[in-house]
Length: 181
Image 1 (cartoon, rainbow, N blue to C red):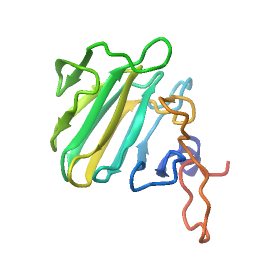
Image 2 (cartoon, rainbow, N blue to C red):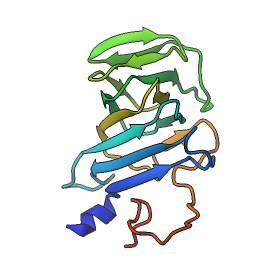
Image 3 (cartoon, rainbow, N blue to C red):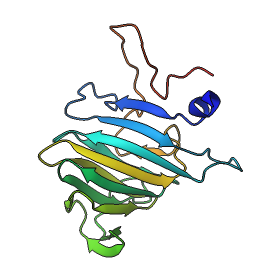
């Protein structure tokens, strides 16, 4: 039903995080499934597909509520860097405990984790992460608890999750944050 698509923001999403340089800092996403925060009788999970270009950075951020698995679905290696969030909202230099393919690892802040195709990492709330394609475009899957991109992203820098797009052509298909109720 179309109302579910609109209400749960399913569909295409593209962002440059308000920085104006999509090739360097951006992300292309498609939300396949999603529930709704605080709503009973809804899916308790979300699923996204992301396309991450070579050296295209998704900036440092964490989620207040969402736990997510990032899965390298193919195309190349995905580089992820992690840091715990301090009480002041900044990066800490404390060791990070994280599960990669269900095995717990302890890594140093900013240590690069390379996910090869088929590998995954589980990111709990308050764990800062940034990622990019190592040497090619990577197809990334995201499976998580319910996703709310309006309220559940905390960026290290003052960035916008849904920046204003200056259209130079008529809109053929709305992005997930452009639906009208």
